[in-house]
Image (tube, rainbow, N blue to C red; front, top):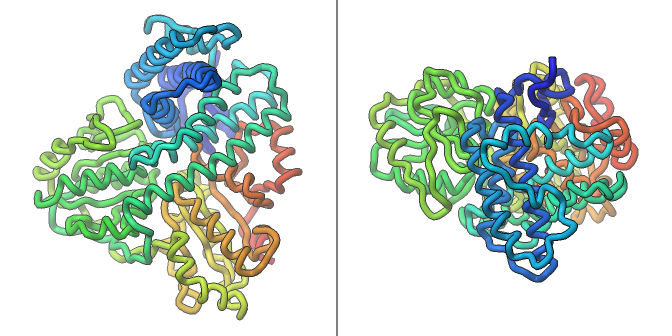
Length: 543
């Protein structure tokens, strides 16, 4: 049977090799192929904008935002709506045609830059431009590693854009890198350099978003987040976008409707500005993959602001709303931009719903982004010098539904009591609710926030390096045991590599898109390793 699609961008890809019939995420072949075509047209658009920039022609901010949001649409679990993706292809083709008309000489442009066709021909073209169109395994691996890094970077830039923090420099890099993925003259060395350059811009992108978030909402601070429920009806917001949350909270004031966070929206509670909203309730549930039972139990409307959608049950599909880059067939989509989105349909629906069903009681302690940790620097340094803290383990990244991910819970439980965990992302749901205690008043699990906030962990590592007068972060009593799932984790990994971090353990498996030769380069040059079993890894990492 011929493959109906091919996708291997996430950790759960079928058989650890690639999804060929239907995505493990729930993505259908028509969606997968249309995403392939969208990426192809974006590469072509990148070639055109890069040529215009070389001719000193400025690119409109709307074009930059189109590229980042379109890339975001192709991230795992973001958009399952083939009609929405098809419209995005048409939009990219229209913009590309307008920009092509500005070129005095369009010679030597790649085919993707000039390709155009009516919608009726999209499906046929999509079958020819997917991942496997690159025949050389190592070139394909390096191209896809770069592409997935660019997708992750585009997600961070999109969030910054929502707060008005655009970066022409980063946008220009993303588009030029897309164009280079069409260049058949680039050999393995040149593509490896592009991978590392993507990591460098990953650091810049995370710094951009960090500055935008803290400027808008203040620096995250030590916070206790309630896990229970209130008596009012509620709206559940999931995904990652803080600007969407701000607009929703503004519009629900005085309506009798509470707002709860889910999954990666948990860290919103750490920001000072959000604490002014009396109807901002606690966190409901766990990581993204638990949403089927948790969304069903919630009973009210759910807003998905970014990726992490699981194909919904019929029992709550009519309560599921999407916005921004997200989409699901049958779900109601809220249009708008960073200035305004009308969430009235969610509010009116919430008023007709019962209060959420309580899943648990208790609280989560978090808010340990860079400024909060810097404020505790004296206590942390003293704990290290006294031997109370002998090791920091960075356990950032993603959670997932595979049973093998129970490893991270067991690893956290097995760590010696003189070891502290630095975390960000939804991977923390495996251990942040465990009674792991504290070290001299410092919680053993220090949550910096979303996967978007991994930059905080890098800043903390660099600060500790300076405090202890060390040459490199690799000289710190610091080890990395990172769980990955999708493309934002890829850009975090590439960013860490660009900062010179070595000996990162990556799991539960190495990416399927790494060819043996590319994987060997990462192992030999950067010491990338995978995980084995808890007992062995504790000995290897902690000693």
